[in-house]
Image (cartoon, chains in turn cyan, green):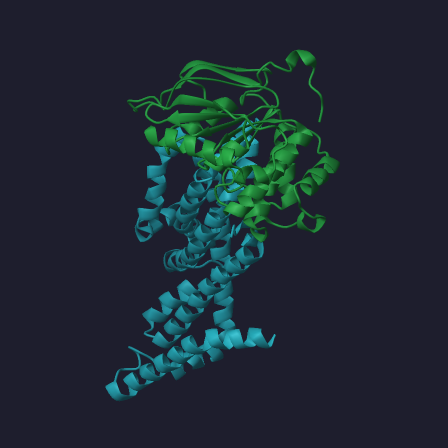
Length: 259
Length: 260
């Protein structure tokens, strides 16, 4: 236990120190630089918003987190299905992979209006945008993971006359788990970004405001303190989702570590 | 060990007749007109320079790769990779255990893939024969030493009681002392179960120690250039390795390899 605390301190002190220095510089910059408060609020003002409006902000964070998690889960499921098909059927991979790259390169901001036309303003569009943004890393990581399954193990399976299903389920899929997890971690960060962007454009429905909406409306009112408070919260959401996957990976993945 | 019927005692388990393997886009055949037969209880070793097609030869014997010319005849019709079979088993370099499965889970794999009922008693016996303790059965491969991993891989290959074990540089990743130990253990297992072996290796001492016949291959195209009968009796011990005859034969093989 003592060791764990010491380890935590050693890991926590350097970034904590830099955070403190950063906040100090930020504060000094405003005081000495005579910067207008509406351009850059003081750290204190942001903290006041975080505390004073914590109820509203947390409710908004919950809405954003919900959209991000639903979109991310859909992309995980969809991505794994697509990757499985890609790894099993070479013609499909060759024919469709370029269009999967399209998912990665399409400017999501540019197609958001189209998505809103199809799915309407509100949560549904936000989830669709999140889904599109986070799908690609899962497809590529899972496809590569399955294709890179050890060739000698494939031979071993073939020697025992394993069915295609066995090779997929007992060899390719488990082989790909480490890569799928790293793809999911990339996708989790993107999912939060996707949800915020979605909320910028698709707004809200039935009083369910997300952080993206908060950021958008705060900007309209020149309330940079609210804006920054929302940004901090959305970053924390991303870190939280990333950490949750990392924790899951740690408890499950230990088996995959070969050495 | 189950005694084979008298009639099949001398029938080769697998036989290659003029087997040639030509990969598309490669000018020189990887294997050229290989004639080889593996009889029951016989040990064959194949040595040769890197890239001479030793591993390809093993895959043709296994039925994993069809010769582009010539024939592969297996004693049992089922002894080819297109159908579920249990006549052949293969051991690779670095054990090739599934890292996400425990030792026990790895041992069950041959049963699962062929659809046979799991014989837990046999699995336990095999693992104990190869020197694993009960407490190791539920460990993951990463928790085992290199030698232990190899022992599990050998035990796994024997699960379905194969007639022929194909060994693709199985002990290349372990140190010399452990290699010699594993060689002796393999002979012991062979005595008990009576399988034949085809061993591909870079290690001349290991090849001599573990075989009745030694084949030397040359590269581009991969051909068998020499067949050397090994004179020593069945019950080989570690002492053989330090005998003058052993050193002499080692020298001869080295000389032949240098001439390639």
